[in-house]
Length: 474
Ligand code: ATP
Ligand code: MG
Image (cartoon, rainbow, N blue to C red; front, side, top):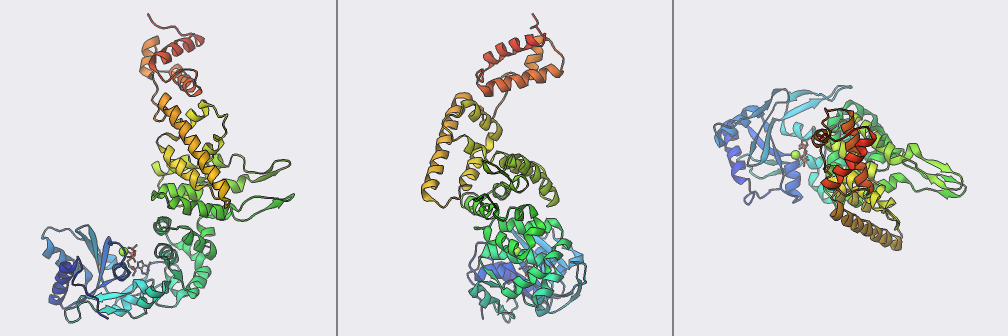
């Protein structure tokens, strides 16, 4: 089959590479994701992989030099690859190779090979398609494993025997699930069985690489597709057991609670319709993890999960450390979301004081909208009457919060009186009293005892300081 590249936006580049490869007496092909996405008419790609029968590094260098004599090329000699950026695309060149794997390592021993050898070492038939850039066959599609049919049937199959493929490089199990989620493909049954069998070998893969695939899955349109596959194959239990611990429904004295695992998947799908923020999706994924360790049946009350948000936010930290996720701002954001995830619901009651609203504003700060997005996604009742009621309740809380915010400006709270001003007022050196007084001012404002205003804060500080035995300096 011929692929018409004449309208392709990269035609000039492809022709250039074709010509240079011919001068070097090397064959060259486009392979991998670019070919797959081209045939599936998916969005513009960010990288293009080229494979050559011969030396990939020298070909990359020759092409780069032709485009721009000063172009820097990154060379990875161990892998026989080289790459450079061109018009916002990562162009990667590799010499065709043949791989064989040892039992306890993801690092294969590598020999040079033919195009077909190289296609065989690829993870899925749809990723093993190649388009020739050779002058006598420019645009010819080379599909030795039926990748085209698999695209039509929306199925992921491995070119070689599945168990061997996944055992050789267990990261491929995560890639299978990631592609199933992002492309909305099914995984061939033989592959699914093989993943179940080989799941435990995921432990030899670095967590960073597992998370690259996991996060791509989390950013897909409907992450539950991937999460369900992970659950079904046993990978989720191995990677995030805090989530599988939420599975199941218990009954005591005829009272049941919902299955918090399935509930969580629904919340993640719901939120994914409203946000592309990776860490907000993570917050949805983890918002209930404190429920498994806090679950208790209380006589007369029923099932309780007392303090699950607080414990959950602590668990988030250990989980981020173990999964090698970023430990700075993103961690604190997810912890905050988990900790606050039930607060807006608690405010629905009409009798809620302004103080409670001010405290939520203070605690959520600039992330208040995200918190509401999470709370709305958390509504998973199938009863449409209840759905509508819950949503209306939220709008009511949002409105009340807006009123309080306009009045008191708590959202990005800046103390109306600074530590320096307090020191000046009493002629004090830095010390314990300053912190105590600042905290008292904040509390008084949140409780509504004084307004968020300099004059009131000053009068308040002078009064409070007296109880500490301090007098204003003349
Ligand atoms: P994406 O759209 O995410 O870039 P991709 O298929 O291009 O998808 P890459 O990670 O860029 O994925 O890898 C490029 C190609 O390299 C793949 O299409 C596949 O042929 C091959 N490949 C990548 N990782 C593996 C692996 N672990 N095992 C076998 N082949 C792999
Ligand atoms: Mg790619």
